[in-house]
Length: 488
Image (cartoon, helix red, strand yellow):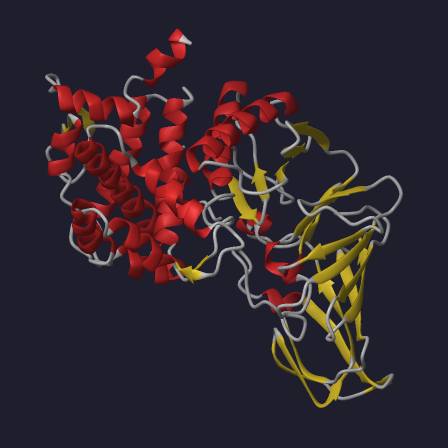
């Protein structure tokens, strides 16, 4: 997941080739060889349909974050019919057409890191000592896409290791049900440690935090969310921490994506060790959440407002509860989010903003989504006298839609949970389905908070005199978490 929201919350293989042998398990089986040239930072891909089936089009993923033209990395496209070269023409950078059809194909992929550092967690690349392969941007979308499981064999050079959250079979073949959820990391010298048999942590050297510190943080956060959701997201989870393959990246910059059961963090470091550890904990709190939502549930459609905006809010609460940030830090972040939403010039509902997330509405998804999560949390706490909170919504969503459940529409499913409560239904209709300006006053009053600035540039703080009910809500929001942890 891209991190423009970080203001709100504060290779592959040197000198050798690598071969990946791919085939589908069903009738449309295809054998594919990918030979990676580390010196040339490219890969040559050759594929052949085992049953000789003919296809007329070859298409690739159009773009990724930081790389608007992924198809521009493809060159030397050739196709064969019955072993003989046949016609192929380029329709656009990511689309090729053969009038006669083909049963074999080949092409070269440029795997030099993109000039835009945002691409580092969202596309395949080859660096000096480590690299990243995301299958959906190196293999064709068509005709290789489909419901068949992909069988992938990876042959690495001597001295190199390869990791994935998907375990290979006894013959070294990976069975991959969804190409878009699969990622592979290969390197000479990553540090690796396991946590309780469920987490595998991989970290490059050069960061101020140690691998043991990363293990401690990841285990703490994973345990916190496992309790919140009522169980783990899957059998095996992998967390990978890498430096940017680009040079001269400013301090504290990071990109991340959670794919399947793998968290990919690409980050520059901070000037001091304490800052380095704090930044890592912030990254892990947000991205580990995504292992459950949206990755472990079977929901479709654009409901980014929930799995991004609500994730930022829950990561803030986790930071307070785990004594990594102060309650005042949480209020500062919420204040900035409210100020951003209040200053928007084009009213958009959260659902509409999610549909336009990559067309300039991403800030609304994060800021308005976080504030909506906050007021829904307060509404639940107020109505239940502290017995029910937003975490109950997450738990019900996970239990009701955990993979391999039947796919359901994300917006309809989540709004359906809110419809069970009159107060939540009103909030959802006003701010999620609707585009009304958010009026914080009722929920600030209920939680014992106030806007000290009195204006659109919010500055939230705890009121001086609190009622018993306000104290209950504040306590559940984390106001006294540091006292509880200190007592422990």
